[in-house]
Length: 286
Ligand code: URA
Image (cartoon, rainbow, N blue to C red):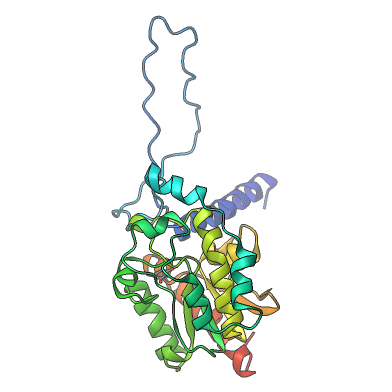
């Protein structure tokens, strides 16, 4: 292969990874660039001409899924979010080093530590076996979860439940499922960093209470939070990591899988779940 062809092949491979990541984050379209206004007579400098060869606008053939990236919340909510100083050490000290889920839930209380409390129907703390071997971490409650007070009970939840019950052959009630944030972000937008910061201590409390043998993070935000860096989920899924000494398997989010329901993605998530479950039973497949 000529150097030029190799360069083009490398570029195409990188573009595929970037596009897969954008899709994983629910971004499958870009706003078209503003049309260039004709220069006004009094403009001292004419606007730059659009570059020849600039990347084409990616337009989906199908309508975009439910928006996940939205503008920030209202000014009042944003203000109340950023003005709260959360003393996470003091909170964690209230339940101590070996908490129960009940103790963590009690400290969470009728939480008003971030702006998400303004629009939630109810807190979605977590669901499942308090002594589970396998603990799943998602991103945040959606509409159904907010209404029912349970994580992963909407469309993505149905898929996750099926993979656990029909795929792994264990009842959903045997695992523990929770989220990074415990309240639904408005219009399912991504949780903001102040919200994640405010809620993180409770996720850590849940992990300390359940003491799972394996954590499975669902999607890029959960993997990135637990690994403390920007995780390229489509590249790093299926590889073992640790969180506070607990083996961590990042996999794709079931909502992404629903949008990109390809054999490749289904097989990937299935392999990840099998490996995670295998590690809890000692019958490792990875
Ligand atoms: N997506 C999540 O990340 N968590 C839920 O509870 C539901 C959908």
